[in-house]
Length: 133
Image (cartoon, rainbow, N blue to C red; front, side, top):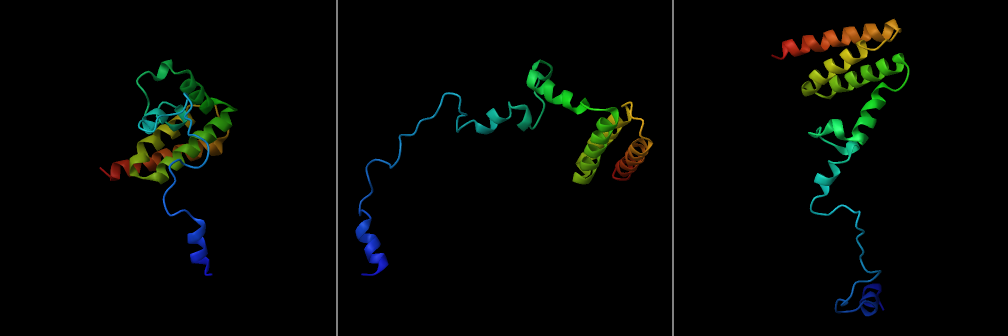
């Protein structure tokens, strides 16, 4: 007997009335299928835009405070890297890059190499912004 023929004899010819496995249970805390993206947008880690009540959201405030966690050199390096990433992403990220470099320069960083890089990078982004107008 061929394997295809044997498979046909082992599988039922009509669909089963009940699905196999346990009954489907959706917990109360689970996101609804219809509003999944809208509900994900309420979680700070997955937000695509800032909410109107950003000052009142404790989880968002906690995430924002992490940007300034560490030594001034680490904070400046972090902002510099974010500026670099924004600059590399596209022309739409140039304004963000300038903002990140400015935030790096506003720290009390004593590392002159980081500060020089931020000044030079901010100037380069500003030149690109003027050339693209």
